[in-house]
Image 1 (cartoon, rainbow, N blue to C red):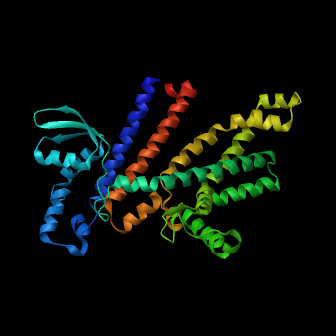
Image 2 (cartoon, one colour):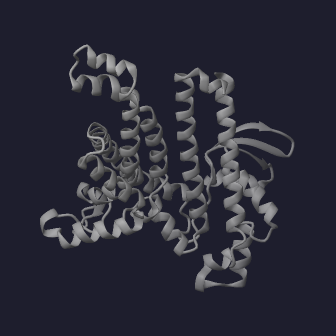
Image 3 (cartoon, one colour):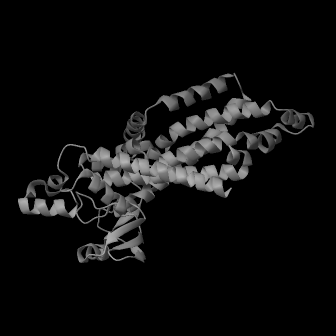
Amino acid sequence: MFAYIIKKITYGILVLWGVLTLVFFLFNVLPGDPARMMLDKREDSNQLAIIKQKYAFDRSVVEQYALYLNDVLPLSIHHNSTTAFTSLLSGKYQFTKLLTFTNYTFVFKVPYLRESFVRTGTSVTTILGNTFTNTFVLAISSIGIALFLGLILGVFSALYKDTFIDKLILFISVLGMSLPSFFASIIIAWLFGFVLHNFTGLNMTGSLYEVDDYGRGSFLQIKNLILPAITLGIRPLSVIIQLCRNSLLEVLSMDYVRTATAKGLSKFTVIFKHALRNALNPVVTAVSGWFASLLAGAVFVEYIFAWNGIGKEIVDALNKMDLPVVMGSVLFIASIFVIINIIVDLIYGWLDPRIRIS
């Protein structure tokens, strides 16, 4: 089991390193000068030189990549010169010294994703911290709705196989899988937030917290969660319906289910205490994957509903060419996805030893 854990963690680290490398070189070959973007109309030759030196824009791409790795990795090395340690102690890093040699010091630190180009002095970590809670709440709500309705509709579809009910549920499932998220967001926001607003009381846009008009701070607005959560849950709902139906039909054809029915057990007992429990394995796998994807940020849904999450932050950063925020967000998303997948793989390996051997 220990070797299996090490193998999965190693794969995860390699994936993150690949994402980091791809993201860095992708955004560093884009046209334009980041230093000029930061200064905007306040461009001055002296300020331009200071910005380039501070962010290492005057160095080669390889050197910039090495410095970016040094910032992002939890373990990093720093020169013991006065300048280097001044920047280290000035609040750039939260770190713990590990080893000190003649000219260099190894430190363990919180990964540093650098600062926003647009919001001067604001770290990318702070920006992600302010938006992650909203994305987490949205993802949990969406997957909860999809799981609850998906299991119910999947069971009904299996029990009434080849009937009108089954065909209707499958039609809804296929429609949900083929419907683009940005189109569904626009339609649902317009229909329930505008056309039927007097009946639903829901808004077309809005986030989890809204600012009070009278300057009394922000307040929780749960109703703004309903439309984006339903919209984001449509596709996983469709997948769960299909998986639950097919898996349940397969389980219902097995001998032990027929034996339980022959013993006189009620249909409810056979379905929910015997068959459904064994039919949930593919559903659990799908839910874990979808949750990782939703938690990573629903870009279109968050942007259209003006939900202040990571997805909306990425779109705003791309519009403003705020590269550190985009790069940091992508790395954060990849880290979440890898961590969740490692946890799921370890759980499977613990439940089924055959997976560890393979």
